[in-house]
Image 1 (cartoon, rainbow, N blue to C red):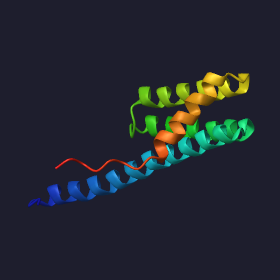
Image 2: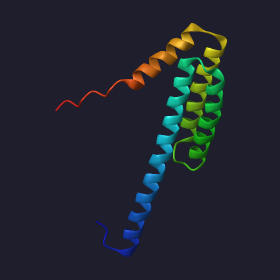
Image 3: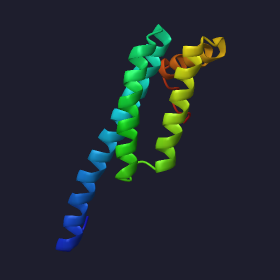
Length: 113
């Protein structure tokens, strides 16, 4: 535990910032999941609208250095490629979306002791 007043304040600030950063990252992941679900359901128009929201959230997080700017670019690139693949009707694109959605829904394995 911190002893000096400045260290106590720094701890309070770090706690607030950590909560804010976690919420932002969680929000991005939630929107990505929703986009993938829409693609899996075949709702390309809804997925495009969701993509705009994901891109906006990722760019904002990158601007505030919550996530690395390259990570934001990578998220947008991968999602736009999947949307394009589904739009073009490529079977490989829908298989990738299905695999990703299935992977995300699996329960995590318990840690080996």
